[in-house]
Image (cartoon, rainbow, N blue to C red; front, side, top):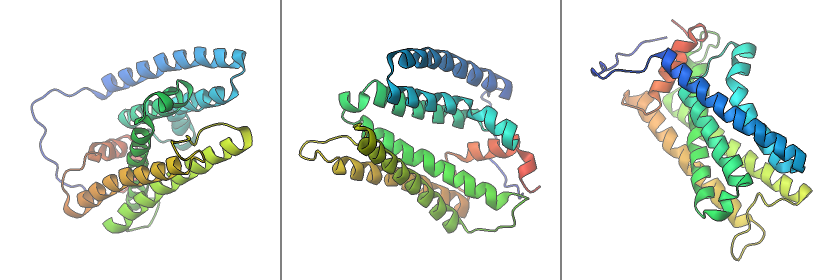
Length: 235
């Protein structure tokens, strides 16, 4: 992989990878204990939707172990922390604790954040393919940004289909009824719009980074991913 000169770091002390790993592990352990207790309570109380959502959050906590064992892939601690925090805010606080109902902007904020995060995932995915020593691809900056955008919008659309399916089959209210629109269509459209807006922000920044080699706020994640998984990339 071609190396690009980076700006020298300032004299500020940085946390060592070991320190970051310890903080990440402690955070995971505390959250896992809390969610396991919640999972047991929900099972006893037969709250099946909430039980399923908590199970998804627990799965996200265990994701790094699965990636490491099955794919020999190590996720940067920062990205996993953001992902878990988002899933916790969306599923536990939003659905189980009813923040979507109690705080009017919670749904908009979470779907915008989802677009940002899925844009990052899509960008990382295609960037890795482009730089992988196992895949012979050379994609332009425009294509990488477009792929990341389409990836984020597709994931957001699949989630809306999931919400619609749950509402239709089990009578849930995942597609929130809004004033003057009991069908949930307005909520769905706003979710898709803000998700696409969040993805667009990431993709424009990603294109600018690849084209102009200017600062990009997920560049450190890309660099850490490459450093943790050198066998996946060209030298």
